[in-house]
Image: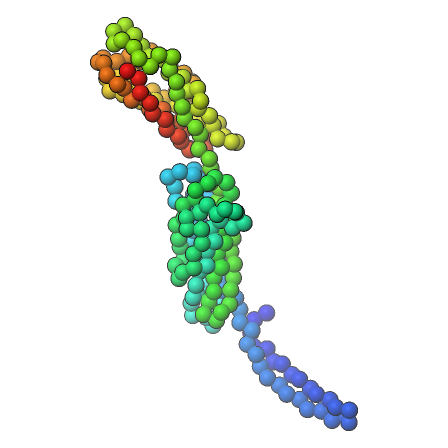
Length: 219
């Protein structure tokens, strides 16, 4: 335990004579490290997201006026490290990180107070893979009148341990329908009121809330 400790040394020689020396030492308590993730960011999709780590709850020990440094490692035990930044030492109690690969990421915070005492906290975050979006059509060039396009999501796929929730289509200028959302892998009967190159965009949404987008053209 921490606190003032009394140390007594008694020296006894062969003649039976002795002397005693007493002194005190101070055993300092450690600070308390606490590491959390902002909001609901402990599980999130890989692309377009930032994970904010916060040391809220971290406290200096009794007799220490402040935390002097925060040493962060955001991709502990992974090689190669895929966090940006992957480590940092600063006097900041929070920091934002972008991960560049999916998987379970283990973050470590080591704090040091102005007594030189340390404490460590660990926190994990799950970075989810995205689905893959792709569409094909049997005929990507047609005459304007009396024709319609049919599209299929062949080549689209869900991430591991996930499934596709729906397909969101945007069919380009002067299309009927202009857009559609469906759980089906194909859609047909898309017509146009004028000729030209049309940009067809497919956004695939999975049950984790992760998306992927694929765009190509028909004429």
